[in-house]
Length: 205
Image (cartoon, rainbow, N blue to C red):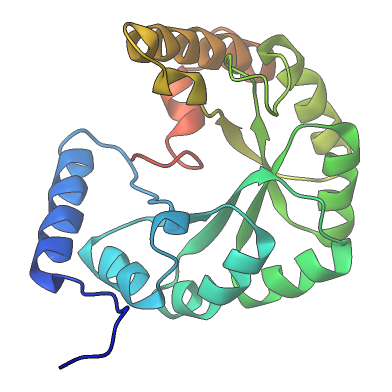
């Protein structure tokens, strides 16, 4: 008898779910960048990349360090989807292992990215009120980044207030759409398609 507790994973079901999500995104022209915080497994991350993921998303620099070599093996990049407070030297070391995009929501974050030599994606607040800038302020951070030679990869948001009851999910989705549209106009001007600004850095999940 196997000692308990232990984790049992149905690898066939995992692969089926990974492939189903990949097909869903591929059929809609969406670059799938799954969030690895849900599994924290290099093996599962490898399965996602084999299936066609454009890269991986993580919540912390520490998670990124775990997945860096795997992503480099596949020639993919890493997105840290949260405003990063790690030191520039640590970010620079990570970027030396794998192309890295970090989330920012402040001028300090932009300057940290500039010192580290990494690209950024600007987090906007679409209603959760946890982190992120007002969508209309994204352009100011983008301008600062460009003046410092930092590549602005896109904007992103987390509509976590959609986890509520009743119509919360639909309401949060509408908030997300409005916020991304406003941030896109602020960052690139009204002629830029908001889908284009978010397809690379934002995870389809």
